[in-house]
Length: 88
Image 1 (cartoon, one colour):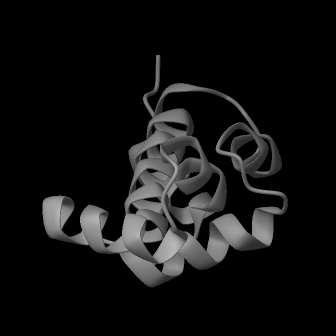
Image 2 (spheres, one colour):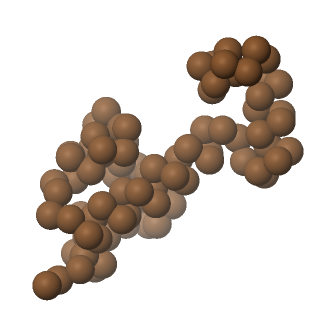
């Protein structure tokens, strides 16, 4: 958020207010949603390890990805992969 706010020449707080008004989410929650959707796609469509998926989504640790999945889907990335991965 700080980098984006700097690009627009506004404060981080002002960016958050504008973002929340327009999208109904904070910039962090919006980014979390984007990362979750991308991670789900990678897990479904690729043979990548969970650690690789986390890195591809801009997360430093697979534990952060696990927390994101548990909080939003009630299952781990491994469980999600087992349920939804495309099988050829």
